[in-house]
View 1 (cartoon, rainbow, N blue to C red):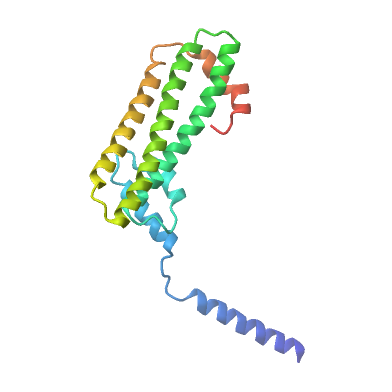
View 2: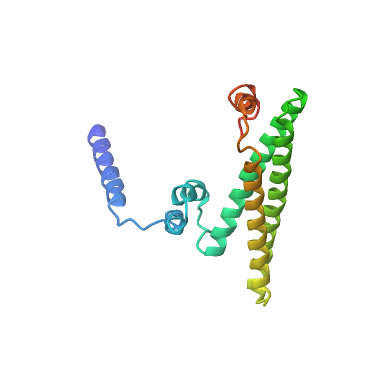
Length: 188
């Protein structure tokens, strides 16, 4: 008798679980946000890279272009901070080794530091813009122009940094990347 009751209970639980699983699936806020991010990323120059970095941070709050821009800037700032940390370690090592490559890395580090500052300003400016939208301010285009200018400047700095290494034999830096540098700087 107890065994029959147990099987009936198990059967009822199975039916309840299966009936819950058969309900029409309604997309969650998170999956809608991810779909929004993927759709917008597909319009960019590098869609797979955009999706790789932004879909991870897609949460239920990303539903507008401004929120997506805020997330993109935050990810860019985070990556720039990681790059700055790594380049600081590389510069310190090269300086200690009295390497001729130190100056190129130091110049690049200066450019990265400028990029971090500009991306930080852009993030803050977008936050100001959110408050203006709510308050109904009419300086919206000025703030958007500020963000656009700082992002363009950060991109120029990154490009200038890369130019520091064109045509140079950076085998010591590559060795640093493959050796002890990544053991200590694996967050980059």
